Length: 182
Picture (cartoon, rainbow, N blue to C red):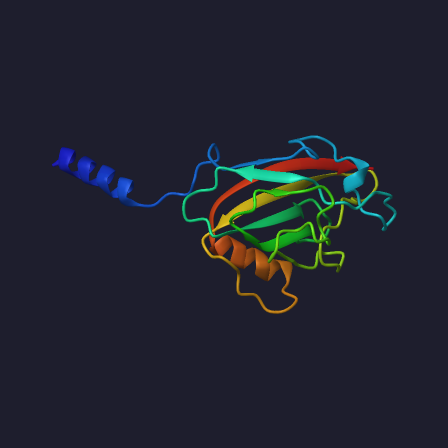
């Protein structure tokens, strides 16, 4: 009886689809590194910060079978808002895309069909790091492989709604967490 139950458990586990492992789906960058300080190019220009406010280069590989589009987000969970701070939220990136060049946000360098949602500065596109003086904040850059070719979102969606829709359709994700302080 125990052998039969174990065998059934193994068969059931093998039949359930799984999300691609982190080893398969990778996010890399020539601009940012895991745990490293962001360069001034990726710092906001305003709110007392003086930076280039450029989006970093990102590239990804190993997307799982069934990927129909991608979403890219940049999020600061340490912002003193009670809900963090969304620096970048891009959806409807075609499945054929594998890279975003430095400074692509807000330009024709973005993949055709990609939609940049307003960041928490209130502007569509990338908004660089700008933590309060003396604080070290984390900036989590995430690529998510989605099971749909585009997200059905209203005009000017909130980052919370976009995040919900991204999460509901994610089949794999990879991330790089950089830091910044001033």
